[in-house]
Image (cartoon, rainbow, N blue to C red):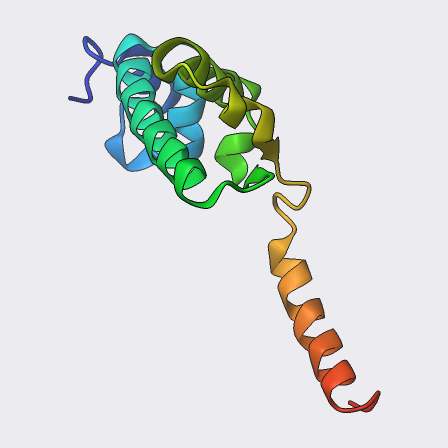
Length: 126
């Protein structure tokens, strides 16, 4: 429940207007340790980590690359690592986790890759 009493930091960040809530304000409230926000995000990260563990046990990838602005935040990456270490007790997954080098750049890389693919598949002609 969004209110001054239950989510005081998020409430202040958004100036008491629910329309101002977005991914960035929620992540900032998480970093600033708004108890209700931390509880919700921590639970979501726990289930995210469980799904990653299932993925690793099925496919055994050599790397797990996490893409997105959420994973650019150290507090989120640290929490994911802590969930694996303390709750799931799987250090193998932690060793495979990496932050994407392309965070925030895929909108540029995608079109470039289409042009390169077209160039190569057409024998060097566009």
